[in-house]
Every structure is written in C-alpha cells, then in structure tokens.
Amino acid sequence: MTAQLQLRSVSLGYRDRKVVDGLDLSVERGGIACLLGPSGCGKTTVLRGIAGFEPLTGGEILLAGRSVSRVGQTLPPEQRRIGMVFQDYALFPHLRVGDNVGFGLHTLDAAERARRVGFWLEVVGLAGMDRAWPHELSGGQQQRVALARALAPEPDLILMDEPFSNLDPDLRDSLAREVGELLRERGATALLVTHDQGEAFAMADHVGILEAGQLQQWDTPYDIYHWPANRFVAGFIGEGVMVDGLLLPGGDVQLPFGRIPATTPGAAPNTRPPLPPAGPVRVLLRPDDVVHDDASPHTARVLRKAFRGAEILYTLELEGGVSALSLVPSHHDHAIGSRIGIRIAADHVVAFAPSEQT
Image (cartoon, rainbow, N blue to C red; front, side):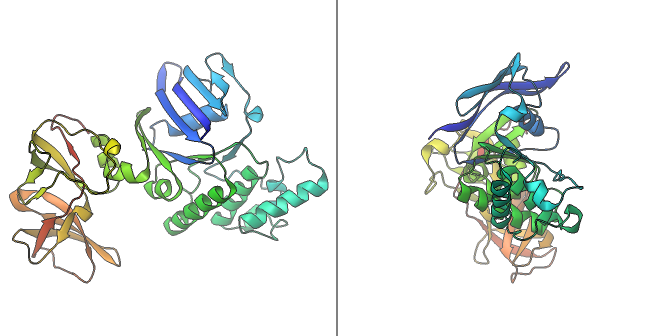
C-alpha cells in the first residue's frame, strides 16, 4: 500500500526547548492511526507540524510522497489538502450548520455546494439540520458537524485533535466507534491524537505511544496491549501491576503463586519483544491474567473491590504480600477481607529486567 503520511526523523520545538525528537512513523492510504500519550508529551505539536502550523527543527514530513515540511521549508496549511477536527469543535457561531459544513467549498458553484453539504450532513446523521444554529445542537451533534466540515472538501488526510474530550464518557466511546466506522466506509486517511485509550482503541488501526516527545511503540492496539515494548507502555496502557518473578532458561516465569508458560498461542513471533536474560524479572499481570478459581490451592485476600456492572475489579493481596488486580464476573461477590482461590492464566509472558525504569 501507499503511505499517505510519512514522518522521517521529525523534530519540533520552541526556542531552546525540544518538544518532539526524531519521530518516525507512516500511515497508509485509507488507514486510521493514533498518537496516544499523557498531557504534555508532544502529540498536539506533532499534529500542528503535519498541518503546517509549526516549522520543523529537524527531519521531513511527506504527504503522498511529496515533501511538505523540512527545515527551512514549510508548505502553507491551505495547500496541504488536510482537514482538521478540533477539540473545541471550532464551529462558527454566526453561521448555520449548512454554512459551517460548506465553509471550505467556496470554489464550487451553489448547486454543487448545496449537494455536497446535504450529502455530508446525511453521512454524519444530521440530515435536514442545515438551517440549525450551532448553539442549538448537543456536543455530539456539534462534533459531527465539525467532522462533516472537515470531510466535505474531500481532503487527502484528516487530523483530529482530542476530538471527543469535551463529551461525557458514554457519548465519547460511542461517537469514537461511529466516527471510526464512518472514516473506514469513506476510505479516509486519518491521524487522531488523544490521551484516552478507549478512543484510540475504538478508532485506530495503528497506535503510537508518545512520551516526552519520543515514540515508545508503534503497533496495533492488540499488540500494544499484550506486547508492550517497555515498562512505560506497560504501565500506561490498560490496567495491571508489576510483580517480582524468576525468568527460567526455557522462557517460563515462576511466580510465588503460579507459573506463566513461555508458549503463547496465536502470538506472531515478530510482535513479541525480546525477553531479558534468565533471572529475576518484573512481570506484568493484567486483571484478566489472575482468574478466580475456588478449586485452586492458591488464595488471595480481597483488599478492595470496584463494581462495574457485569464484572467486579478486585484488588487482591497474593502470597508474599504482592498486590494484583483480578476482573471477575459480578455474581462472584466477595467481601473485603475475605480470601478467594486464584490461579494465573496468562497467555503472554511480559517481563522486564528489574533495572528498566518506568
């Protein structure tokens, strides 16, 4: 496939402060990618560099194989065929919905412009609302208008900057899925930046974990969750705890309360990060790795519990005083302080040398 977006050793900064350092990534045509990281990691700065709002201090950005940014040369934003969806929607309050969507279509005649506006409003589920004012819409509807406005000129790339962060959690998750499906149906190429893992996993084919301006891992959501490249990614993605274990020469990991086998059914060999040398290690245990089993000889004491409807997330004290999380069907309702049987059911060995910092 052809890369629609390429970043080659891209660096960005302000005055003497380097914000992004040596960033390399590629998004295929029709792909949806995401840069995910904590606040201040540089992800919005990357987006601004791709859009042409910030000059590079190093490296090069290419769109469809054409260089648009390098040191000393920046193609203006209006010449990049890029659509932008902003965190605050950025709708024009003095323009009706239809005029907002048609704002970037001034080169079309009136009939074609009206047809395009009506088409995209229907696509995003707002057919017939072209005469409404932005303030009459809900947050989710306003974000759909912003998306329609970005898609209407049929750009080569859509950039989305924390597009759902102003919405309530339930609407945020559902709209992220809807937008991802819509972009795929249209064959659009998109890059999202967010700090929300739910958004990233709901929308993106590939996710890049950014920390302090450096790309920690660029992979599929599945592999980032199950095969984190380092302890930062392991701690940032999902829920889990690090426990002390012993990595045996064959690749198994021995824990005080069970053993994790080295075999990993269904895992592609090239996605698995290398294990450290045999010896003491820090092992990542996800809540689904610690299974409630009344028949197990190993028990744990319930320290805390968080009811989640269909499931309860237990914080457990295991043998040796180790704390771990366990996600259990909610009909297994145990009191704090009680002991329950547990067993380790991890299909993936994720272990790091004790010296590796988070």
